[in-house]
Length: 128
Length: 128
DNA sequence: CTAGATGCAAAGACTTTGCGCGACC
DNA sequence: GGTCGCGCAAAGTCTTTGCATCTAG
Image 1 (cartoon, chains in turn blue, purple, red, brown):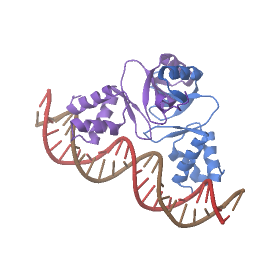
Image 2: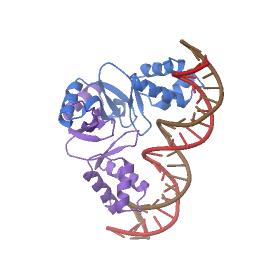
Image 3: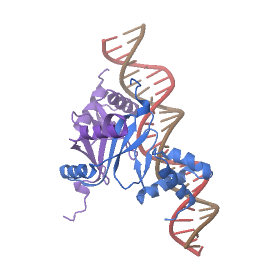
Image 4: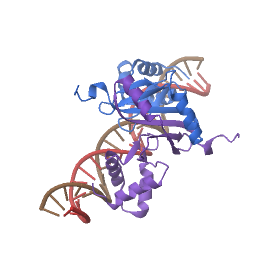
């Protein structure tokens, strides 16, 4: 794989941005440094990076998929249903959960996704 | 909410079908009993049922969202990356995981989604 | 030179919306 | 008769594809 400026930029945006941006947002950000970059390139690049395991695609149908730069530890996500913010939380039980799922389902498990949905601190009713 | 034949049919399809079908598949099945039913109705109905908590929408961007008729117990899913099959597995630790996520993130958690990805028994290399 | 990348535009898949008609209470 | 639901068609959003051009090795 060739490390083009566009690819470097996309990876950089992802690792600098903890908010797990959607493709459109990545496109907007990359436009600032490489104004000619097309959406097609963004999508193609995300695809490549996904394939080589540099990032994880979090599928969402409302507002588009979100992208998560690969980290060593398995982590879960907390998703704010109001503002769309997505934070990470550690998931210490991953191996355990995976083992149990494999045992019960007879599936051969390769990865997992754990999301919690609710309201982030900023969007919670200010009844406190 | 009015229980129209279409709505009954959709709920029935979902509870009879453990494969968590996508909207298109529900549409195809309902066509057999109500040939005039439109896609719009399917989507609108799924929306309503989701709102009143009768089903859960599992967001996927490839091949469309999948729908899961609500069950009492929280359960996780195992997704076959090859054939798209989705089975349920019990998730006994749900409350525990949720509590920890809430604590670490300060989010107010309302629900969760736990998916495991891998290969179903039929799609595993037959090396056994 | 040639394989891999880019960028444009068009196509595609899935979903939502607007609106008039019809059914239920 | 007013509200809610249906069905059609059109529009919308996000993503992918085809193809010509460009570029690094």
